[in-house]
Image (cartoon, rainbow, N blue to C red; front, top):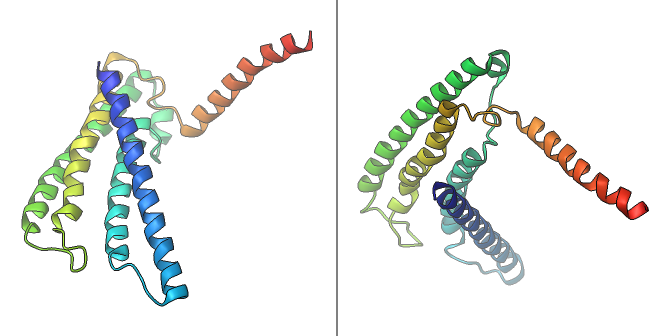
Length: 187
């Protein structure tokens, strides 16, 4: 059940990221064309694009955390044995959870402070801008807790695997899967 929820949430974040990118692209491109071709423009283009970009960055960070593709320094983890590697995963997860708490508290406070302030052109509250910190803090808890749980259960093989190693492993797996098919085609 948790895996199904995680997959659904991941797909939801992916869809929201695509929507943000599409709307940003249409607004910015449309605004450029209108400015240079017709000496006009879309009034909300800049403010809405900026707001969508901020949401896109934070949603992308949650998605990257869920996929374990964030940039990281893993020199110490690579040098440690399996038990210490798990300890390091749990320790870094706890630090990230502390950061989530900071984002939740700070995002909540900033959202409340800015409820009365609004964008000049969009007319919506600045709470939409600062609320992303709150959403980010809450959403990041789930993949981090999942990774900590996997490390505590000893199921941490790919938690500490380098992204380049994962790509290489996937490429080798794809090549191995394709090779038997070629041999059958030749006969």
